[in-house]
Image 1 (cartoon, rainbow, N blue to C red):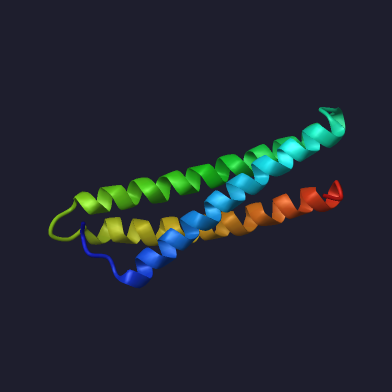
Image 2 (cartoon, rainbow, N blue to C red; image 1 turned 135 degrees about the vertical axis):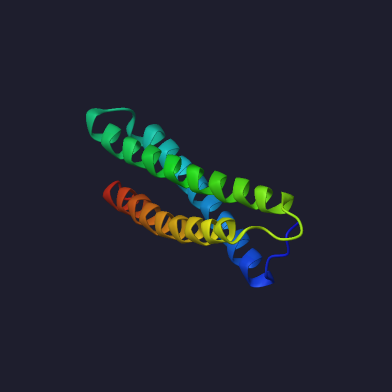
Length: 113
């Protein structure tokens, strides 16, 4: 693998862990809403919001994971533009995680979960 600084790896792995946690949280929240309130016009709005959040989180996770895999294939070092792409992907993932966390929490508050 192209050597990446430990702090970069720690940050990326931490973000991946956070993304997975939020994917789980959105899925669990969807399940609880369906179990407690069923599928209605009102719940469908929240369920769709949770589904959208989960899809964005999954995309961010997948992009990070794929990019790390590709970086590992470069020898002796990855091109600068690929490392820049990793930094941008990380920033986008963090922003998406923050936005999705807010959406999930808003849905949970609305349904008093």
